[in-house]
Length: 265
Image 1 (cartoon, rainbow, N blue to C red):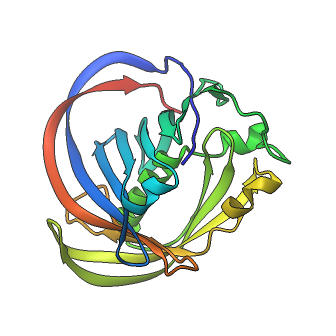
Image 2: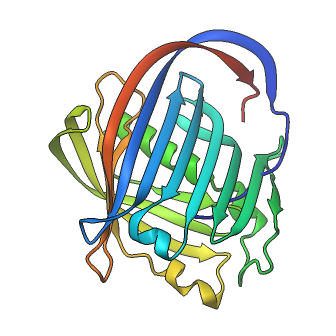
């Protein structure tokens, strides 16, 4: 539950009204199928040339006995020919009576800048290289890229390099099975994909648990006439029976927004 960020002005103030899709999603997490872990809310907006995502995680139930967590993350960027280009990512994380904030920006020359408070004492062996950081997206923009790709292709495929300010890893989609879904406000087809996590850089010996996250599964809603296939279920196998994030509320709206035009990546 960690991530990074800073400051930059890539956005020119040329306001133009455009049609955007907005999704408001809420989830509940469970361990072993029934033990509550907490709630997640996601607000995502996507237009023809831009996107934004705002996510909040609050621990609950059994998880509060071990690490009380309150996390908010935001990301925004551009959409060009169906490809997601991240531009900013911000995270504010309160956990176990600690606090960390991260502000990451992508500069005009493609470099990643990050303000992290408090800064990490260790950066991993090896740390994430400049080339890896430039080639990656932030965690929220990675999920946006997956959802956009699945909506376009209706396939589970691709590797998504991700950098959160310290950890650099790959998320890979595979498999693919279309099924019916009727729950929590969404009724329609979903594409069930396998999800693999591959740790690459930024990890220390004490991060062994982060290195060996087992293969999981993510279900994407194949919403008709949409640029976006929002995830409606995510599961990860664990020795105690697994953890699953289940959809509890699904709302979609089309709105007219005033967008900020941005320079092309």
